[in-house]
Amino acid sequence: MRWMRAAGRGLLVLVVVLTGYAASGVRADVGAPGGRGPVTLATAGDLTGYLGPLLEGWNRTHPDEQVTLVELPDSADETHAQMTTDLRSGERSRFDVLNIDVNWTSQFAAAGWIRPLPRERFPLDTFLPPVVDTATYEGRLYAVPYVTNAGLLFYRADILEKEGIEPPRTWDELERIAETVAPKYGLDGYAGQFLPYEGLTVNAAEAVYSAGGSILGDEGERVTVNSEAAREGIGFLARGVREGWIPKAALSYKEEESKQAFQDGHLLFLRNWPYVYAVASAAGSPVAGRIGAVPLPGSDGPGTSVLGGSNLAVSSHARHPDTASRLIAYLTGERAQRQVLTSGALPPVRAALYEDPELVRRFPYLPTLKAGVLAAAPRPKSPEYDQVSLVVQAVVQDAMTGRQSPEAAVRRLAKELAAVSGR
Image (cartoon, rainbow, N blue to C red; front, side, top):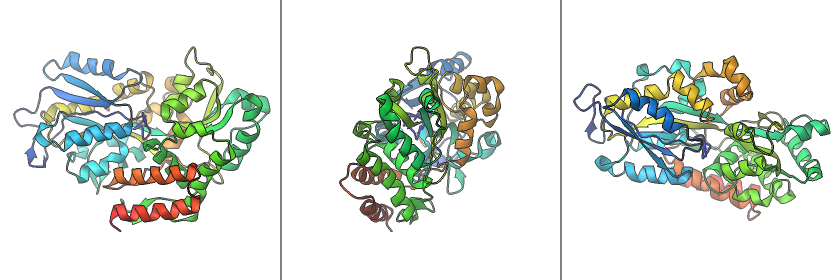
């Protein structure tokens, strides 16, 4: 998942140190000796190469507080595994600051791996409102939003214009165009991220949400997925594969594979994160100047995206908490956030940037993206989120491959989620 992206690949994982809190037997006050010094910042694969130059700006002006970048795997699941293994090592942890997927905050906080942060140290009122909620657990701030994201529907604008068709607003419209128009141009109809990994959890959650349903409630305390809306949402995905307007190849797609299929001119429609627009519009892209982006369609109108992105959290065993705190402030400041967008093609958390005329000219999807973020819903919050996600992936994969009907899949999903949450 890139924007954790969730997104995926969309995920950046940074490891930095922060401020005064005692956790897991470790105390690190900002004013205490050793509060400043070198820190480690770990990230999932930096696909656009923007982060190194951004950190060079910090290192030039902080010679005694150098940041070392550690890049973890591109896959969100692999990054999560490496991070949790390291965090469980306690004082031997290599990582100081973690840029975690927005949906890992609850798990990491409940496990005592990251520190609660003082709200007053960060200008949270300048951020897009929904992103702040992703950084909290049980009413406390455990991270600072760094990158946000919302899924968009990308489409071949040249083809729809030639056909005199508006971009779809509903699933029915999407299915009809994918079935009837795509084959005329030798294209597949629609794809998302359907390999069993975090991206499939995101796509499945969006389908359920876009039909008016939910998966969990009360931060994992209630299982709410056994509903007609969930059957409709999972049925939409399963029907696409069965009827052929979702190609079987899409069952192996993550963010990059699906982006490449669209960029190479093989897809009419693609659900993905906003970085696709910048990459597919670049010079040399086969579809440059021929794509558009709209909100995800839903059951009977615009759908609901999962809120993606990543948050900067501080390890409970961070070495230099004052440096970490100021590094997080640097990375979430307006200047750095502008570079996150212009150099990294990642959606910033600062609300004002979405209304900057110069940026909107350069990134015309920003108004659509802002609307998507403001209307987006988080993935189900749970201290056992990694297990929740694995269950969703396994069940939805069985539905999409035809091994189980959508109705049976929803019943199984409710039962297995109840077992995970102890309900």
